[in-house]
Length: 236
Image (cartoon, rainbow, N blue to C red; front, side, top):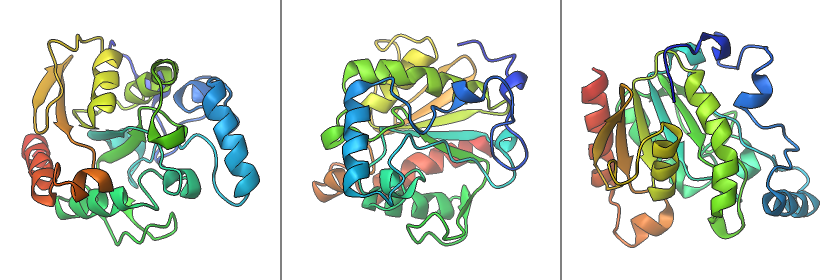
């Protein structure tokens, strides 16, 4: 993915994408139907919970404007009762508790996280998105859905002119990010706390901050914190 010319998709100071012909490319519409299985799942969830977000979850940008983003965090997909319910990445389930506590500790977010979109939490120099924007059944997107949604991941990256670092949460997120950037997986393998570089972007890998990973001990808060220590050191 070429990075030099990204100004045409540069979001405005409010943290929302600038109004232009590329808007629909950066974020899928709320009624996106590109992936039939995900669309059917969301429609069923809308019938059961009409007051939930129930649609593609857009990228969350820093309070000072998307064009101040230096760090992009890429998760797997919205959780059913997390971001799919609230409409904000990693908000409403356990994964957000660990992620946002860590971001606050390292200066990438400010305020108090209360697992609600109106809790007043703000991101600093950091944007958060997902490799797949719609909630998948059993939290498991299939290959075709990951590939289809990659166009939005690519557009989101291109819209960030000051982007320097990426944190990928989990192997699916990592692999989709590497492919988005035009890299070969064999040359940039996933591994917790691994680092690699493509086209001037430093990529930091981490196990996903899910409850399953923390409950089984695969990921500890200390292990997760160490990844962001390295990010903070790199960004300065």
